Length: 45
Image (cartoon, rainbow, N blue to C red; front, side):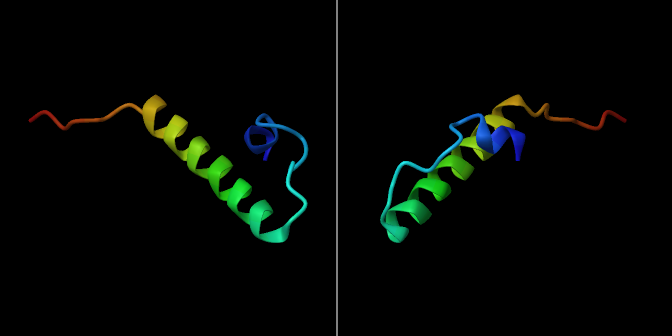
């Protein structure tokens, strides 16, 4: 939740459909940032 709020405390849109779209965009950005920061582990043996 802390990461979600780092994109802004409030949702800017007033329309419920646009609010949902804004939340989806924020979540997809967080997932992308997490994917970029996650190390890939390869098994050697």
